[in-house]
Each structure stands twice: as structure tokens, then as C-alpha cells.
Image (cartoon, rainbow, N blue to C red):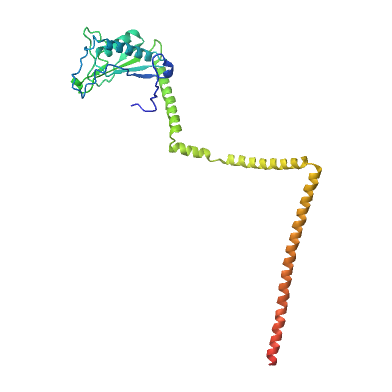
Length: 292
């Protein structure tokens, strides 16, 4: 199955623009076709395999299909090309496969959908016998579905080329693609794991705290240094004025402290005087009571 991680929509002309998909290793070619297999739900009878032989439009479509498949095979990293149509005509199906194999001998037609019982036709003169058992067909008459055709091409291994190395490269390519998918998924919709990871990255470590404290101390030192520099850079008159203001503030602070101390002393003295006078009054009251 294909998903958004594997499929990229490129809304451009494919022919002559191989650079836009130069990294592709597997290509699915589903070109425009006659649509002769789309008969389900219609009252028209299903066309037969050889009905389009004399139709010039079908020939033009077949020429374009061959050109597109060959273009896909010319991609620098292409290893597999799948070809499919919704047509039942031989010219667009087995005929295209034969023309492609003749034009590009570096590729071979390999079996596709092996469990599918309905295979290709051998042709009127047996011209498709070599590969008709490798391709597959469908028809409403035999399979109760719309007609379609499918073929799979694979690039041949060059002489002396190590197949194991190819497998290793394919595994490395898979790992690279997996990393790319994870990177794209994280940028679009972060998962819980990425949230936790980002939180852990945001939380400062002990070393970071130490560094921040050192930076704060350094900033304080720099501020003090700047203040001193500004004071030294000022004129003598400004220095004297600044010193005079400082003296005045000190005097005011001392005066304020003295006033507070005087108030505290006065309150303490007044409280002691009242406490001393009260017992004398009590003694006089007692004497008066005795006399009475």
C-alpha cells in the first residue's frame, strides 16, 4: 500500500523532465489509454482484445505509452517499472510490452500478480508467447470486473555486478527514506515522544545553570565597571555635585535616625515616670482609709 510518506505529487509534464524524479527507484506508469475495459454498469458489450487493430487513435495512444515507459526506464536510479492500463486492446497492452523490450534490452518483463489466474494473450501469431504468462489481464466476461492490464519490468543486473551490494544499497536507501519520513512527520505533526524530547531539551541542565549564574555575575561586574567609567568620565563639577548630594543624603539619614532615637527615649522616660508615681498614690489612699 502507498501512503503520503512514499508518494509525492508532481503536477508537471513527465516526458523530457526526468530531473524532477531523478531519485525514483520504483515507477508506476499508468498513462492515458482508450478505457476500453470500463464497461461495468453500461449496456455496451465488452470489446475484445483485437478490436482496436484498425483504430488510428489506439495506435497513437500506444506510441505515447511506449514513450512514457521508456522515459521511466531512463531514470538514473530506476530499478522497477510497473505498467498498467484500463484497456483490453492488445496494442495498448502486450503490444506495448513487446515494443518496450525490443527498444530497451537492459530491462526484462518479470511475473506480476502471480496468484492472478487470468494472464496475457499469446497473440495471433504467437508474437507474445515469451512473456504473455508473466503479465496479467482482467475482463468482465472472465473476472466480473472492469478490464485492465498490468506488467512489471525490472532492470537486468549488469555482468560482474554483485547482487549483494545492490541489496545493501537498497537497505541503506530504505534507512535513509525512513529517516526522511520521520523528519517530515515530526515537522508536520509532532508526536508525544517528540514533545517529551523537546521538553527535555528545553529543561536546562546543572551545567547550564552554573553557566547562567556565572554569566549573571559577569554581567553585574560589567555594570559596576560601566558606572565607574561614567563617573570617572564626568567633569570635576559633576563629581563635586555628586559627592555633595551623597553627603546631604547621609546627613539626612543620620538626622532621621537621631529623631527616631529621641522619640524612643522620650517614650521610655515617660513610661518610667508614670510607673514610679502610681505606687505613691496607692500608699496615700491606704493611709486615708486607716484614718477613717
